[in-house]
Image (tube, rainbow, N blue to C red; front, side, top):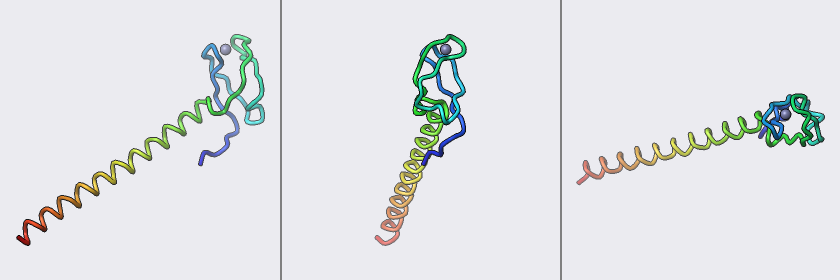
Length: 85
Ligand SMILES: [Zn+2]
């Protein structure tokens, strides 16, 4: 679950990073650097992208751990079969 934040860093169409208070997310804003109008989309914010990366990293960690467990179990089974035969 991604927690709501007090403010988001959202890029304007020209690549300037604008700090947007939570209450203005979803509104049309004007970039203070280039005066371009853009919609403050929280999903496009640096924070949301970082949260998604964290989530993806955690999922990969779980997949990697599961793979290690499968490999170790298979090796143990092979050794046991070798000992029993
Ligand atoms: Zn801008």
